[in-house]
Amino acid sequence: MKEFIEQHRQQFLAKQEAKLNAALGLDPPAPAKEKSFTSKAKQYLTIEAEHAIHGPASAADAAARRAKCDPCEWNRGGHCQKCGCRGNPRGQIVVRVTLAGAECPLPEPEKKWRAVKGIGGSLKTAGQALVGVAGTIAHQLIGRRVQNPK
Image (cartoon, rainbow, N blue to C red):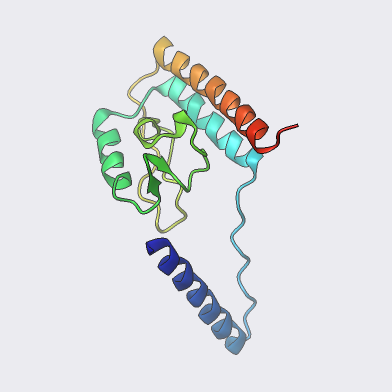
């Protein structure tokens, strides 16, 4: 129900803004573009590279992030519906908040948390990043196969 109300509120506000812009003779703002798959993949690989090199977020940073994600309206079963992970195990909120280079995927000014400095990279964090990327690739391939069976 919250999503329904929010969607209609956003539509109402967009119509009011368009009317005001027309009355003032201003150009309408460009609509927000959805990030492309390539852009999302590049962003994800950058986050994993940061994890490999600089390590995870501190326990305090991860806990603070989690405290902001848990009550969020976009949290569905431990997955953020805004980040684009589509149920990928590496995209679970409990994992995502530990990735120092990750940020809340909500647009400004609703963004709830930002990237932080990692607590130190190691062979373990490099391995976690490699396994995470491999798992994500597998998840994407299997998901595409399920969506588009031949």
